Image (cartoon, rainbow, N blue to C red; front, side, top):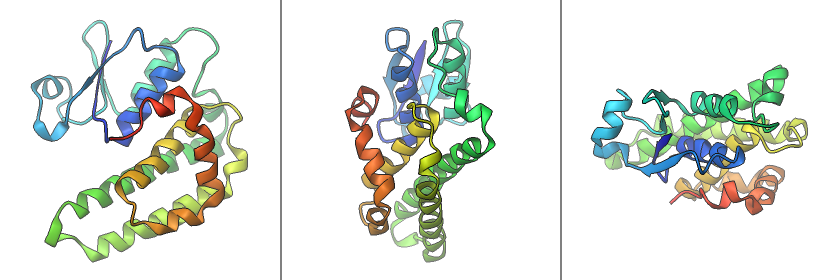
Amino acid sequence: MKLIYSEASPYARTARMVVRELGLTGQVEEVAHHPFDNPQELLDANPLCKVPCLIDDKGMAIFDSQVIAEYLDAKADGDKELFAAVNKDWQLKTLYSLTRGLMDTAVALQQDKMRGEGQSEFWQERFYGALDRGLGYLQKHLASFPKQFEVLSINTVALVDYIRFRHPDYQRLDSFTKLTMWCDEQESRLSVTQTAPK
């Protein structure tokens, strides 16, 4: 299998972390492409030209980070089911959805910043407000996270690290002490250290 990714993408990072947590590094070749370069390999596989994109052993393209994670989780052997807890609990599934929505918000904020003089004060206020509320909600429900490191954990680490990477000006992040400390505690995992955004 081949996983097309970008080193800065939080979505691609979640897929790369899933590969490592499931012990599939020997079965998945990782190929870095920047989607803004419109690489032909990515265009041929995903009409949206977005990462991550997984190409399986039969040449089938699978895209969207959640779909890729579910596919790899189903393919993996043993008891490393990363979706087991989320699929059995509506609150956990909702928290997982929240992490995805917060990633969308953080990425949209970065895209707006890239507009330079065309930045929208209205949308930036909306984005920062959503981050404030969403991260607060995650921290409030941190105690309900599964004890094992699974998809909700993966998304949360990728989200917080992406905010640190792209939005160092977002000082409110430091106020979510329990959440950031929890994320820092995961730094010893190889899946976290080997996929840090660049």
